[in-house]
Length: 275
Image (cartoon, rainbow, N blue to C red; front, side, top):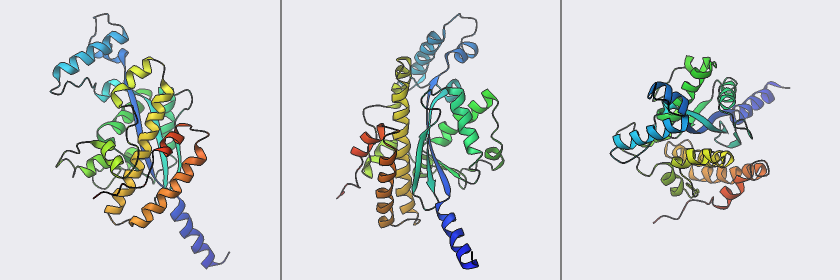
């Protein structure tokens, strides 16, 4: 191979290498941990501890939210989209399919991340929830995350939390969240399920539906990410449209493996012609 051909190949490799990992998680309260830490000696079952914690949370919330902090939760779904340096979608996956065991999900995430040490993580509210959840899960199970912690967790120049970015790093509230941003760019957003339903669905054994929901949120995050790169000048609107068309083909090719992608694609459109 000539030096010119080698440089050309290197340039191609730089464009097509995985540069970003778009990540989303879903989790449930850990009743055993709640019983040990918050309600020790009261003889509560796991379910009773969770119900008690949700009641306590509602009582302490100005909005009536029964959200339990991430420190008392465990992941039951982690979905990842691999994205090339040119922002093209390479593949999507739900970890530890079809069993979705929390320990294995966490193990596969951190092991996988060890192979993508130069990738930037892209999340929506990941800095406040998804990443601390996964960090604490690694702590729980004793899994290494050496390169992740070695590179630091710089809010402004490290991994990209799109909620933090769109909210001007806390200067304003991003009311409407991912659902709003996804629908602004013609993507499905919420399709009949919300995050506060996850625990009850888990109790009903509907773990596949939880992972389907997580996967769709991951894709919404990817398409919102693309639009933010138009804002930063990394992409033109024409390039974004081309990447959307390519992403649809990539997802269609995976639809047999991940059937929920068919429903997602049916609701996935180009940007609305806003006035």
